[in-house]
Image 1 (cartoon, rainbow, N blue to C red):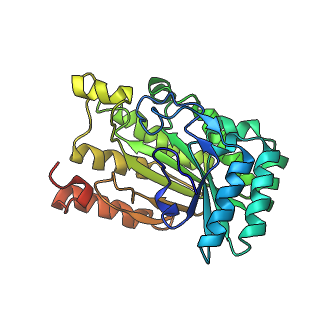
Image 2: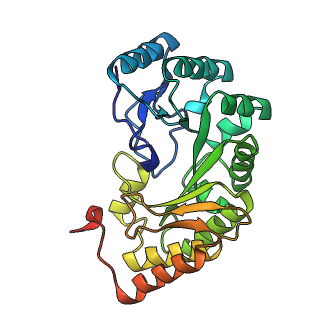
Image 3: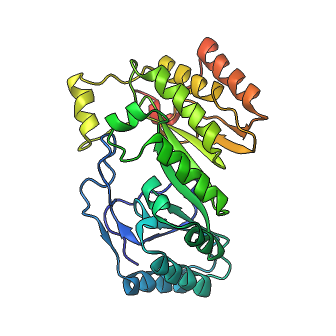
Length: 289
């Protein structure tokens, strides 16, 4: 079994078997992200991937979930992904779900038939980094996708029967752009209606360009109070008509929230307001900051 460089996965894939089908990210332009800056992008050979799968089968008695890494495994041609998924099905018949990172452009390049085939072959969830619903913010952070493209990608994935988990970053627009970022992110979730919507809080490390902007004072991070207010404004602007699991359970978040929209929206807003007015204990990640 071989892993190359740092390996990342969503919180909900904590107990999944992680298989690298790509190394790095094919885009790698987002100014806030340092995850794959030191890892040249390449697609791993199928024989190499199959060897990893076979070694895992020999060593692990039961695998319920598999996550295909790195940054955007959906960039692979559909026929290549199908061969990998067929190998997974043969080796791990007990596997209930395969998850995958996907960029909006990855999804848009696939036909509806491609996505439906991947669903039939075991892909049950795709994680899309939306980051913001504001075209201004998306342009500033060099996301490489517009608001309209993100909405199209989420709807297209959901229509194919694959659940979408869309992530947004609290604080990505700084104090000046906070309101636009929050309102636009909430309305994007309302329009796209992903199965899952998750918020992270901005945390940038070198060599991400935004890290150096923060250090120089060119970009200002939100305070804890401003982060909570932005989170509340995002939530206030989410109006979905089907169930959407809402989470702020990433380690970067100051306050962990969880519920299903729309029914849990009043409770979540009360929790936020209580934290803003009465205070709350910081999560371990933020203690001492």
